[in-house]
Amino acid sequence: MSLDIPVQVRTTVIADGNESWLDELPDVVDSLAREWSLTIGAGLAGGHAALVVEATLADGTPAVLKIGVPGRDVGQEAVALRLANGEGCAELLGEDAGRQALLLERLGAPMHDLVADPARRHDLLCEAAVRLWRPIGPDIDLPTGAELAEQYADRLPELWEQAGRPCSPATVTDALNCMDRRRLAHDDRSAVLVHGDIHEMNALQASDGGYKLIDPAGLWAEPACDLGTIVRCTPDLGDDLWARTERLASRTGMDATAIWEWGTIHRVVSGVYASSIGFQPFGDLLLAEADRLTA
Image 1: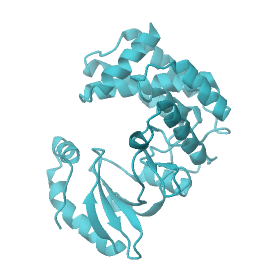
Image 2 (image 1 turned 120 degrees about the vertical axis):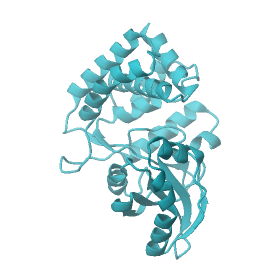
Image 3 (image 1 turned 60 degrees about the vertical axis):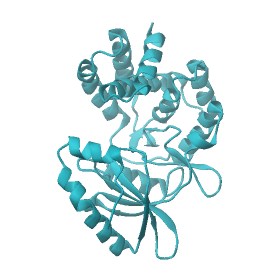
Image 4 (image 1 turned 180 degrees about the vertical axis):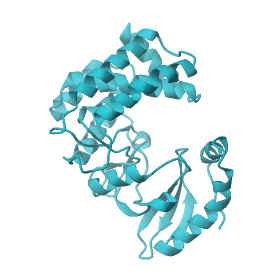
């Protein structure tokens, strides 16, 4: 089988020293196609952490086959998709943990390409998030919002140094303080399933004309964690981010301060990470906004 592997995926795999995976990939796709009775179609561009190709089921149902690159465990994503059961997120049609493969509902174009008004995008992202949120228990194997905040706090200072200190020390301190407050605020009784990385390219049009989310990180956290990623979106929009925060709080009944603090966390962590891998101008835009807000 001949596969068109996107440059981003190929670059990631080679940089990690896993070139043999590229050689084995056609056989993996072929075996999955036989087992799941799939017709494999064109490759889909986008991320760097998985091969994603169009597929068609034996009954003609359009789908997507996703195979994570070495080191990319799709298990957490699969848990989140099973729990969502097609509400707010793409439906999970099949999974093979051993080969890091997921078979997913095929959706349409991203919200970014279809909805011109950024404020309308934020409303639609919020609607998708609300459909996804649902109570889950501690028996579900997903990290908590408190664990995410703690992980970020451990990682951010070192990543900031490695990236060449791309924002002010005060901005890093502000983010670390927000992480500490959100860690302490976690409450199992009110935590829900959240996506973890909501933005306009992770929301695709569904058959009913609405939007569903893809690529969930999968967390057990306060809903404000997801709303904070919407506050992080479109860093070059130039709108009043506190007004955006209050709008999201009003629409969902969530605490505006919690949304704002998660927005700060996502803005700084994403900005520093983007700077560390040269993903520009996104990193610079996020951190310029973070420095302005800190100041």
